Image 1 (cartoon, rainbow over the protein chains, first blue to last red):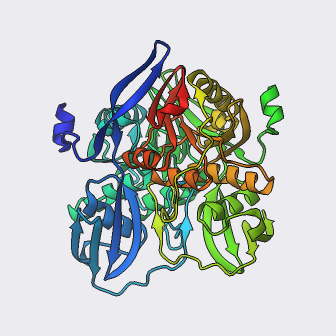
Image 2 (image 1 turned 45 degrees about the horizontal axis):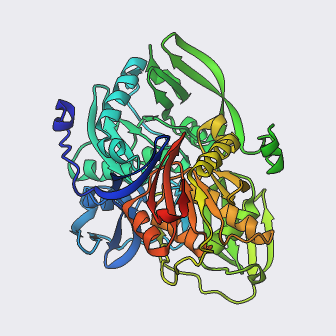
Image 3 (image 1 turned 30 degrees about the vertical axis):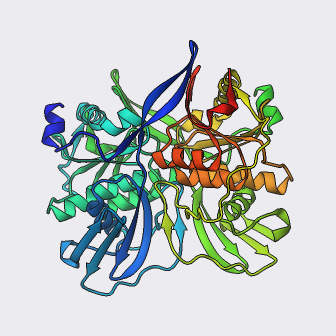
Length: 265
Length: 265
């Protein structure tokens, strides 16, 4: 285990994966081998006694996921809003109590591949320190560390990763079978650990749709870096919300889709 | 355009993508270039006058998507259930009328990255012709054709693909920013064109979670082939539902996770 993985508190994979027998075909013929697959878990979030949603996710950091989901949905705005959280990992239930009775949206908005409400109303342009800039070389370096930390992906190919970074390196890292969940886990952890997200950087392995932009803007994060592709609406929102959007970071290549003035070098 | 693409009716990309200016960084420095990104579209399905769901999707085959979604959700069971569909591509609304008044499920079940209700109740083991078998070499060949047809993915890296195949080749192909949508478009097209899905094969670019298995089992499809990884629950359901699950088909390699007796050679 590398120094970086130890510093970020990444542990050995146990709960997140399972070993199963597989029939493997190659040009040399077929053979019976053991393979590692990612585990899929079902978490129901109960808000103030009312069932809100069931998320299919990876079975780790469930409290962070529940809180991060509520944050991203705008149902919680800060740590003070949360009076109590009880996570039952056996039953797959996270009960969250907030001070006020919050109106739960009734409509179903299912996403491209994330299943979240767009809720773009009330999303404001990020107000970041104009000094927040990032050399291109540092983007490559962050992505290199990010890929190194993605242990479950390397073992199974079945998860997405997300990280909160500052211009020096990774601060918080998570993996989940859902690309939205991986980011929500980051935001939940930051809230509960009193870590500010303003002026920071989000790195994701996943595609960047409009919903991801909205989620990141809600946390006032000025720089979003992805290993994958954005959609046209993702790019439009990044421009409108003042977010620097970087995609396809692979090796020493990348595309800057919006607000490129924050990228130097 | 290849013979295969012509036969499948794949047209030039117009509506599905957009060209935007991008700042590209490489080891040689930065340059302003034009890049192609995938378009993101919002489709609201109105069922019998009641707003059911808003899907973020690619702006093609919207009628197939609406019908396929209703099929996968169990809200429609056959072509006769559909009395009328009106798709307004400008407003992004698909109105569907069915004969009976159908109870719309009220709970929200959001997925790992698909946003669909599990609805595994009532899902039965597939009843396929025991003769339906597939040589390993044909799986590799199907995936080769599949990758060749994935034009929007090759141009943008921002979509998933899905195809219905028989043991000889691809019958129906679609791409969408959502991996669930890509499959639902296939099922909607098959229903409206009276193409049976029984005893056929589904190929997908996306990860295989429990929801994908349920969706495929509902259409009584005995073989599911993916370029990507399955989850543990995906493998379990494939075993339980009698579906042959093949993953990580890349070049001349693949893993068979369940019901390998249908794969010969």
